[in-house]
Length: 175
Ligand SMILES: CC(C)(COP(=O)(O)OP(=O)(O)OC[C@H]1O[C@@H](n2cnc3c(N)ncnc32)[C@H](O)[C@@H]1OP(=O)(O)O)[C@@H](O)C(=O)NCCC(=O)NCCS
Image: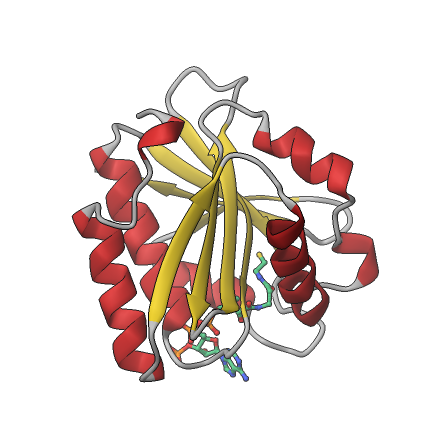
């Protein structure tokens, strides 16, 4: 997998675009980037502020650092030009079997099935790219009571460990 080959025209992403278009009834566009320009930063911050409490938000330097990770993936989904979804992840450098770390996903209009579609597409794409597993850190529920752990469980993830601060490491093995 090469970072530069991400394209909205890849069948996995174009199917995702069509299904989100069906859910929202708007024009949907998917954009990938390996760098953070001002517009990307603006989109990221907009979704991040709607989704994460201040302690969980990233500085520009932290985001840039993550984008320099091996095989990083930064994806924005726009509906009628407005950012709806951001997804950030990368390969875990210290794991010999190919593991992708899903660092961030945030959806503006929740509970419509968009998050499920995005993760399913990600799973398909990572499988086709030869990855063996996906890992992420989450919480049982978010601060608004949305059941994050069961959201991922429904998508096939299993808990592998629980940290002292209550965060939960989940993993999906790709077959
Ligand atoms: C977690 C998140 C990405 C899920 O995306 P989504 O588009 O809302 O996901 P879906 O609509 O596919 O599924 C959401 C599930 O959450 C539950 N849910 C209940 N009320 C909800 C609400 N008001 N909003 C969102 N989800 C709700 C439902 O169980 C739903 O599952 P089901 O209806 O299929 O049974 C999204 O809620 C989000 O952006 N949250 C804030 C950021 C965050 O916490 N990211 C994850 C960090 S690990």
